[in-house]
Image 1 (spheres, one colour):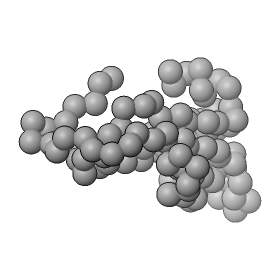
Image 2 (cartoon, one colour):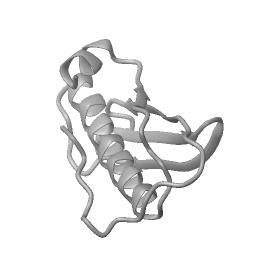
Image 3 (cartoon, one colour):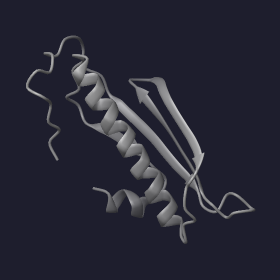
Length: 110
């Protein structure tokens, strides 16, 4: 969907850049609770600006579920980042690339 900005948002100044994110989840990685671990890292051009690693709040029953939850968390962070950068007057016109290792999750999130 198209991202909307308030009418009083500043005009864009500066050079454009590429946002990339790499996401992964470890299904049932915790031996005690069987909860999955989620992790992602976000890059502006080739500079890492944010990394996130945590246990998921719920116990997923499949690898697809844990990978999908990790991708959702990454998407929400990147969407907020794009909005913040635009509100600071930084041009964000290029798409964000989210890379993952589970092909079925990537096909189902398009």
